[in-house]
Image (cartoon, rainbow over the protein chains, first blue to last red):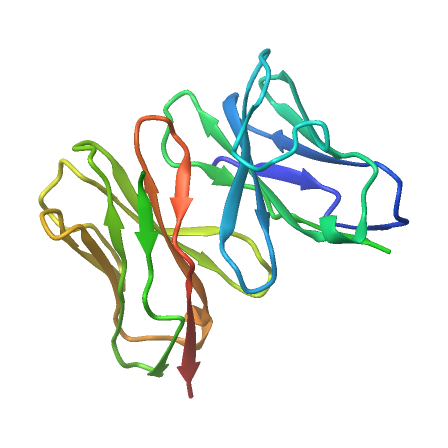
Length: 115
Length: 113
């Protein structure tokens, strides 16, 4: 089945640093990737949609300069949290859609902790 | 705007019994998809079952089945013969033409031995 690999699975870093999270589709071409944020005991909130080779579309209230998304190839999208602060600590999950469209395939998530 | 509502924050079921999780949604679209995802403590999102809105027949996957009422915009999940491994957060999700998923707030299912 379709596999989406997300790396790293857990990262702890100091306030003010930038953190990059990778999302790779291992056995299919992902025309679209999605980035979600999940706070403890809450639902997944869509942050942005990225299509290969074009700029990401951000949801209302998501700072695009804070959360940089790059989707340079059909198998890789990256989310960079710039100048991270403790309030950015959360669980970030990516998902990918292949040409067929259904269903989305989710990565295992990244737990980000900012000290 | 589309919304997905799960009115049960937490449910409990005895092992081997049946439980139903509720989900309602609001949309003006006629063509869409509905999903149930399971999220165990590992936080991995696991697809449980999906339903295409144009199909009248309710989807079934082994012990999991849905009751899809399009007119009522209701999409409940029934888990039969519950097992300890079914304990998790369950999210109902909606998807229309933009491919964006809208998730409900989730229902935590506890399975009692």
